[in-house]
Length: 466
Image 1 (tube, helix red, strand yellow):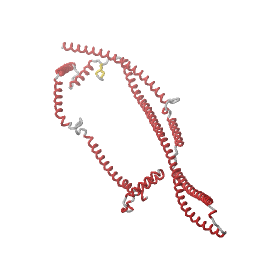
Image 2 (cartoon, rainbow, N blue to C red; image 1 turned 30 degrees about the vertical axis):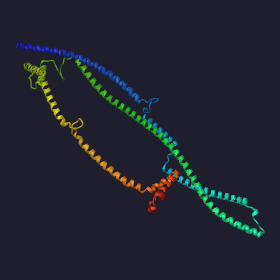
Image 3 (cartoon, rainbow, N blue to C red; image 1 turned 135 degrees about the vertical axis):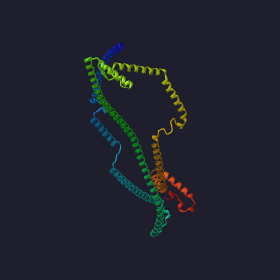
Image 4 (cartoon, rainbow, N blue to C red; image 1 turned 120 degrees about the horizontal axis):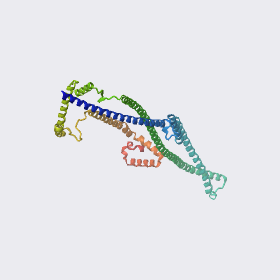
């Protein structure tokens, strides 16, 4: 009994030594926590200063602002409106933007202009014919005067002279009438051809000028497209910068709340540490449990720990606690020796080798595919794959249907309306490229001449009939 008492006293002395060591460690940890708390306060103060500087940087108006997105939102919108006004003025100065009513006025003006051109062409033809007639009369009179030979006229009396004059007049009138009609027909044909050529030349020059203006407008459109794309890119960049600024501000506010909560928690811990330091009561820490150093509470704590490790209820008596403690140390030594012997590790190694052998046997059966993945491993993807295949088949059917509809409604219609298209094409060539039209007509005539006459009128091509 005395030996047991001495043993218990020795153990209690060892426990008191451990308690003193833990108390000194607790003081060291308390000092370390206080130093960390001071560092945290300094870091919090520095972070607070940086947050205030960032807030002042983002909320204070720049003078002048470095970028357009650093302006307030009202001034930014005003800048955008000003840019749109300048852009509208530039468009009005450099491009003719017409409304629908203006386009109607333009079409009426074109019709009036075409009527004027036709009237001018008719007047030119009429006055040209009159001028040529008068000129022909003067030339004929002069030629009659020049070719008149009085020596060939043998007149005895005035009546004979009148008779001879009447005969000459009738002969000249007959010949002049025939020559006049022939020349008038030729002249009318030449005047019409000349007028038509002049009109074609005027239309050609007008079309050429329109083409040059269209090319200039195209170049201007290209430059304007580049300017607009650059402006849109800049606007996108500005929008991204604004979003980044808003995200930074949002993150700053969220970080501020987190720092405030961390600061409150840290201040609460500092207060608890200071109260513990002021009380200066020796405590024994077992995990999250703080117990006084009295013997009954110490025995209760030891019994609770042993019952937790052994899985059975241990009475809070010195003898039972010592017995269970010796049992716990014995079991712990057996477990340590078993781990050192390597029996568990050898068993695990053997099982791993067996699993690897089975895997090498079953791998060719599972990974039976060109890909390094098992077949039907991801079963959840089978339904989306099936849906995608059905959708693809439906789209293929719709595409074939659209192709047949196009062949029936568009291609066959174009084949039927070939004559109308050829007539429109010839009319365009007549206005823009007369030589090409003449060449096409000559080729059509040559092709029509090669066709046998037994075929009748139906064998003549559409261009020839036109």
